[in-house]
Picture 1: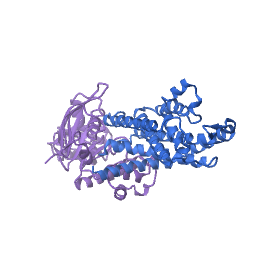
Picture 2: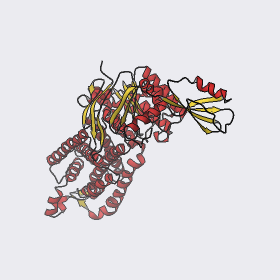
Picture 3: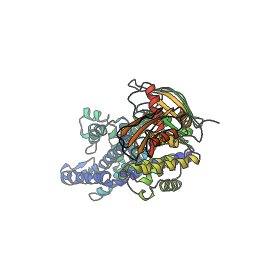
Picture 4: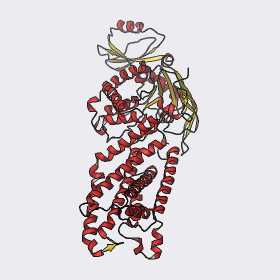
Length: 257
Length: 311
């Protein structure tokens, strides 16, 4: 295939993925808007004023970046894991496997779909937040780059989950028992400086903490973590998961007999 | 000239130890209409899965128009269109998108992909359904959709794994006509089917696989020539209580108006009709009891020790 043909194949997979979640927007885009609106009402409006300031910002402003990031993480992961597992379950992954599409084009197509849904949900949640607070933008480049890196990273994680999944239960186990706890303990609602030293050190083992803090830096200019460490961790994880995903595709794990 | 498909010593052993293919070698000439037959579990779908790179082989070589599926997979895949046995498209996508997306996977630009999708959907009578979600199509339409999808990148070799299974006779016949036309236009076709009438009617060459081995590989005509005896059903006008003596023929009375006659291929049938007329028995109509290829298939497969065949 020529580079032009490979790009056409990539664009086809990406378009197919975007249309897939756009067709079912009530299931894919609307829920994070409603969930986040509830977070803003309960934690921001009702409980927030009693908490007071967090790192020099009103509580509502402090939690906005984390909630946007939570939505991006959850939905970029969910999009790829459900789409890839669905394509295995209905066997239409074979449409791509019989065609001369290189593995990296298949992977980037699915990841592109995950990033598109993650960013769509992130923008939707940001729009909802405007009803509750005004947005501060401290560093747009950090904000944008970190949200894209995070969406790529969790799309890759979702892809690997989708490759290994053998039932619909398998695509909900990781999000429920791993992703959600790590996200909630990743500093969405609090600064890790509030924790005892031991738990601060434990929190540093959570990669999501680095992403949420860097993203918050983009909004508010504050972070519990050095920015360089956040980028290094995100890029390292992306490289690792990308390499592993390509290996799985090359071996045909779960998709070729 | 290289073959459309060349298979050399193809072997497949699954993880559970089941040996699906024991070393098959086969060539399909360019432009051929080829039948790959065999009972359930014989290894047909495994062979097709390996050719389409959906199943990893345990040994041997496969090349499509001279392109090895392992060392030159992109070129080999570009030559191949596959209509699998099971429905394998996204049931929640519109018909037109399924076909156009498949073209996209082969690097065909979007506008051209939709133009081709229109052409094949029209040819296969699905254009009116182009915006319909695929899950709502009937069984026959789903089969035709898979044919349109397999043809959209205009492959030189088309493999159809039981394309007419569960399809009513009218649609089956229109699909046969369509396949004849694309074969006449130069596409090599390999067909697996349980309807042996289909293979006899369409295919010039036949291979039979049983228990992972190739037990026959010849032209359909040559294979049919090996049939020495054919059984015919004769419908007669007046009811008979007892069959008269008909020396030299094996004739049985099935019911009072139906006879069954075994007739050697080297024997003229005129004599039988004369003998029947002499006993004032008029034949209204006559037909083969079984499809000729089916008889041969059963004989070959049973000869190979397989008694649980389903033709």
